[in-house]
Image (cartoon, rainbow, N blue to C red; front, top):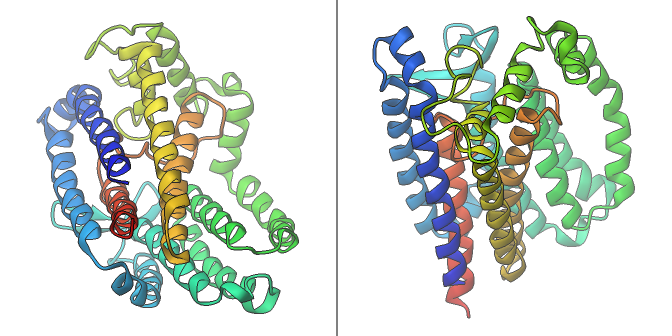
Length: 364
């Protein structure tokens, strides 16, 4: 397993390094115009990265049995933080969403902690009640109620993309744990009316769905961002226009250093750049699944599966959005997009995955 750990660490290091270069490339002119400092976003990203590396090292070294015992307090703390962030003057509101705590020069998004907390809680619960997972009332309903509380609070922020991500990861973990497919199907059918209301009764989400179906119907409005993403990806060609030479980052493509950084990669580094990034994520998933299959205990196996699912889902959603294959969700590209809580907790998750691999190695 040592080779697997080295491989995962190397993949993440390459993605982070690429992210540092592309964040500066995509944000320098915007930062200089808006903040008076072309290094503004890069410096903040490096701070988040330093914190994230520290969290990764901590997660790699902690005893997983200790972590398992703290799974319940951690999910409870996450729920409390999700409640607190909704309180005016405590949570920070930006563009109509209240998702962040402002901590000095940094922002903390409790929904990112909730992703890790939910994975730990499900892994711990299943490891204790594995024989009861086929039971609807004793195996399926308890984690679904906790998921409902977490997702409900995140939807109040509002943050549909994160809510969907947490839901998918939880369902994947429960399915692998032996939960009956009919129970999952029943939950899915029951959630359809709520999902329809969330997508089509909220004006900006409805516009996003319409823009996904036909962005050219409002090319100067809601369809503008995705059209500019198409332009960036299309103009890159095979080899790209050259590092730092993007035109779309010059105030044409909004969120070019965050949610749509993959588009800038496509424009500056071409098809070769985007295929390389996609291949790195595929390699990460492949090596991560090797850890899942080698894990010795139920807790370790499910925790590793949760981490792999998290990175895979968010990478697929982000790439799918920039390519127009999915509606805009506002999720960053793991390890590459501009910092924040996402980078910190992605690195923490990688630390947990490497910890599971180290545990496997110790018993070989």
